[in-house]
Length: 114
Image (cartoon, rainbow, N blue to C red; front, side, top):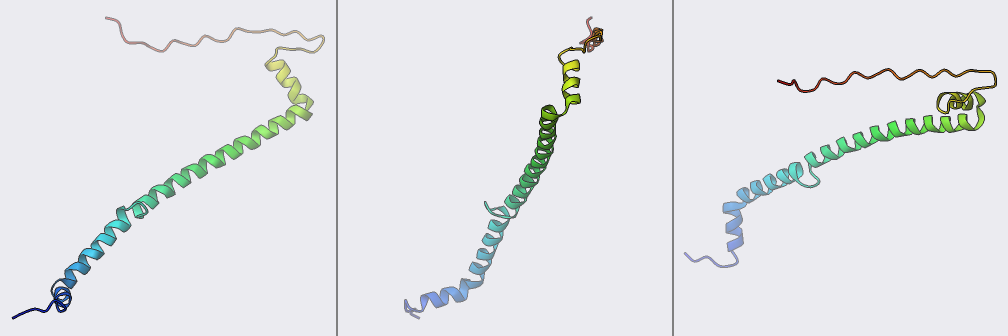
C-alpha cells in the first residue's frame, strides 16, 4: 500500500484532528485565564482601578476642604483671628495670654532590664 503525498494531510487530520483540536482549545483556555490580558490580569487591574478611584475620591474631598480653608482665610475675619490667636499667640488690646506648659507624655515602656 503506497500513500500518495497528496493524501497525507487528509490521513493526518483523520487520525489526529480531534487531538489537535483539543490541544488548541486547552491552549486558548489557558491563555484566556493566565495570559497577559487574561481573566486574572483583568481582575488585578480592576482592583487597582478601584483602589486608585478611592484614593482620588479621598484627595478630591481633601482638596475641597483645603479650598474652603483658603476661601475662609481670604474673606472670613473670624478664621484669621482664630489662627492669629492659636498659632501666633496674638491678642487683642486689653487681653492677657496665659500659656500653660504642654502635658508630659509618658515614656513608652522599654525592654525590661535584668
